[in-house]
Image 1 (cartoon, one colour):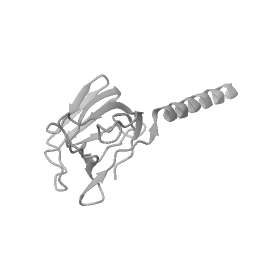
Image 2: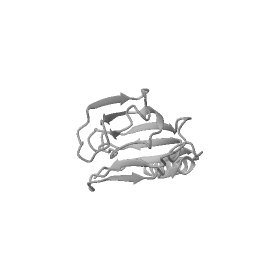
Image 3: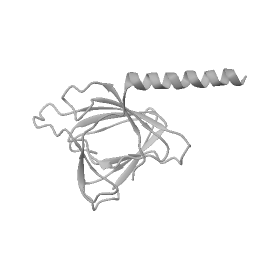
Image 4: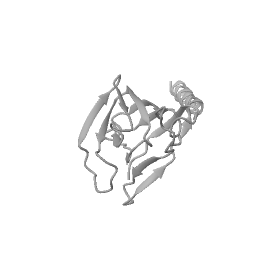
Length: 164
């Protein structure tokens, strides 16, 4: 079973991407996505913090668990995917638990000539021997995430003051 990562919506769905067009993802140490595709959409992915390993696969097939290539992207690096290039992949933060996190920002869009949008990401679950559909949703919207982080930050500093 894959260890969870956070998906944070940066902008509302405009109907030209599978799910949200702009997503901030937080990858804790030892987390990874399932092997999946992005509904034949295009994407630009930038690593904001840390690094992420991208495992590339020739097809979305339950019998193919070994990538043909793995590429590591560091903070500042940008990569992409398109319907015919790097579409089937798995992202992983390989650091041991409590050793750090990775943050990426991703932008998705269907190609202009795509008139039949596949609104799902197809994926292979670690526990089910079949390809499944996932409707891309987020764990939080950006403003809620920002407020939660601000509240945690303020609480931390309040505790520090009380300990002093």
